Image (tube, rainbow, N blue to C red; front, side):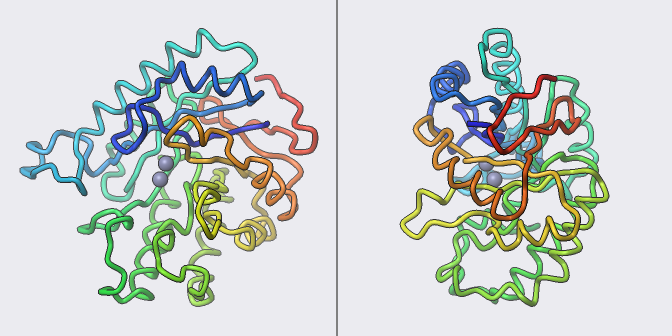
Amino acid sequence: MIMDLHTHTRHSPDAAPDTVAERVAAAEAMGLQFMAITDHVEINRYYPAAYYHAEETEELIYDSEAVFRGSVRETVQEQAHTGSLTLLCGAEVGQIPQDPALAAALYRDPRLDLVIGSVHELPGMPDFYFLDYDKLDVPALMTAYFEEELRLAETDCYDILGHLTYGLRYLPNRAEYDLTPHLPVIDEIFRTVIAKGKAIELNGSNLKAAAPFTDPDVSLIRRYRELGGRYLTLSTDAHETRYLGYKMDVLEQLARDAGFTELTCFKQHQPVSVPLEGGQREHF
Ligand SMILES: [Zn+2]
Ligand SMILES: [Zn+2]
């Protein structure tokens, strides 16, 4: 198994209490070549709630700084104890356009191999997970979502654009939602990612759902490739050990279906090509 570049450990507020060492053991047992630890850093709630004169709620958890500090420290410690696995130190940084200066400072942390940039929420709104779509103008919401993804793509604070189409993830009847009106801005996101030498992620978090799907779907991955996109990462977005590497064979096949013959890792923010066919390890 080649890679799983988006995983959460006990440091993420919404993940199981698994240590990095447990994940490393599981990764090596399944023959994973590259694994990145990317715990949640919501940049708009980086400091404790008091800093923002706000109160912590179930929907709004603060102090991502503590997550970042603990996750990176533990990952760096474990990097000294891996065998066949290459353990990459990362972070999933949410809402970068809401504080690009802070995100840029984080990106420069010398311990980081990669940053996944994600949009989990729009300014002034909770995570899409908490939205009541029945009460919202969904096309307008999705327009705002893809525009926010474009703002993220235009920054230099990420290596991998995380789970594009996350805004649709919890949409009832997601499969019926017509993306056609959004394709011009999606193309602009892809062109921006490509011009900056960044990567798109194929995220398999919902391959475990009753009606499985990926974010984004394979048609958008194919579109990215047709526009010249060559940097693609695969991930489960595992929040517990049993989903590490889950259905990675499906993700690898989708990547091949979209025309990819190689995948991309990031070491110290530098892209490293890894053959998809056969999955031979490339040494840094
Ligand atoms: Zn995410
Ligand atoms: Zn995640």
